Length: 333
Image (tube, rainbow, N blue to C red; front, side, top):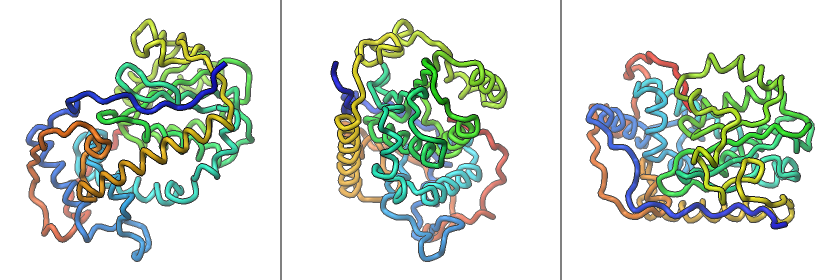
């Protein structure tokens, strides 16, 4: 039986599928872009000498990133900036740039309880979660591993792809994640990965987990709720081609996870993709607001036109007191 190895992102289309902004959206985007592009910008709540954006953080603040947060905040500028500031601070504090390394989370990966395998019909990467393969006691590292895998799913998103699919199979008895761990992961996904979820597909749900979903779903916004599907037929419904889905989900992917042969190729693939994109980002100017399409090597497109709205002196970041009051705390994933 073949061994699982995460594959390279599918080829991108010739035309960037990104939506066109209307005049009002362009105006709000322009203000947000100026705010985070300002040399005076500092991450709130971080030591002054370390508050300036690093190169990695500037690269993270792509055009699409700003737009994801704007959409999730219903284009309310104050909400958008608050959420982006919070995520920038969280990414540092949680250890995404130093603590959560492949070496740190590798013990969690030994059984293949989470795997990146295949892409759906819209080229979104599929992140499989198999709780029955849980191999460690509950600890912060379990959640750190889940976040690390989420970051790797982002790595394998090709040009024009901004979302991933979560495929969770509760079949076979095992030590399912606690409700607190599940809730913490949901909070991280909602707060720090807005508009990253394409679909959440769940099969073989046990009674306790089913009760958990029933309890939380009324509090989930309608857009996110529509992305969650229980016991879907992903091949029949056209979500996945047979060649891109695991056998347990009706697909043709039938392989074993051998850590020694599966782990390093995943780490190497993602490291290489990030290195290639960092090099392109620098060649494109190395600034906030560059397009992920260009950073990922998509076919060159006509430059989008942005209408930047009024803002303070461009040398200075927007002050919180200059922002309109936030009227929405809606969270979308």
